[in-house]
Length: 455
Image (cartoon, rainbow, N blue to C red; front, side, top):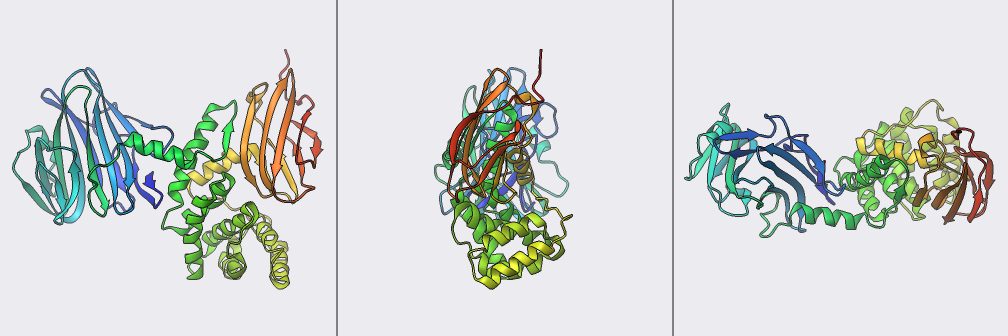
């Protein structure tokens, strides 16, 4: 998924083909070298990667003397939203590249200067293209590209239409195309590497995880960017599921963007079932993890009624705790509701990013019990003797940081907890179930875990 702070825009498949989230438009690409064209989603060998773990992607396509790289990201200047598609020729030969856009029920006109959709600029090349194609119905735009596309203006209209531009790309050169999603074309769109750098700035102060499992750390960095995009989703459940994780990560400003979508939908009475449960968790998270009002007092009744049999015990307990300081009647109602919820109901997030985040974060901290934080509740044996560092985890009982360093088979735990109240019990069940502390900060040498390997 790629997007910006306003939400998701498109998805990128394993071949670098891009499809907008509403499935209205799609974009594909190919490379011509000599008298042969390779189309990325048809010919084998395309390899997709992220750039700097951001929601920015590059796809490499092998040609005889190297790779041609396709990169895609979303740029937003506050007025316009544009897909930025960049090609780089990393091979030792000159090539041609082509970008083809597909749409439905519109008129496309292609010239060497741009492709227009309904008379408005749609695909804007960085410089004048060498040729342009436009087809409708079952016609194949790639067949025309292979036959040397015309330089004159061409157009197509119908239920299914496609248009594309062909550009010469010398050795070690790049070229960009801007695809207008909203607004108008950007005069100087940033390149995908610059957009990825901007994403690093958004998440720079977020929770950091440094553990022996490098894949877990990489997964977390990628999840963060995906959740910031998801926070801008028009779908209230998707937006709501991003909220508690962004609060945990310390990105409460991004979480509040999503909460605004949740509150608007809740006030309209549109949330039922699991979507209402996700909304309750999103609002309670602001009260408990950030310590600020979320409007939960006013919306709890309607959301709890909408959740009905989908409400789980964990969410109900969070709701009750978040409403403890509210009006006595509201607090009492929340407590009764928590006591009456079916303990067999378990809330499961619906989005891939939220599901992945639950797996990552659940390995590090369990804060589901009252006044209790379990550090490393299920530590993998592969982490034995390896350093562990977690910085800025927003629990329900304050922001938590901790490290583990090993002295032979015995781990030394260092911790610090900020916020919430005193007398929150810390334990480290996955390493030494016998240890606990209510101190806000400290260090201790834990017992050798019973799963430690021995020579």
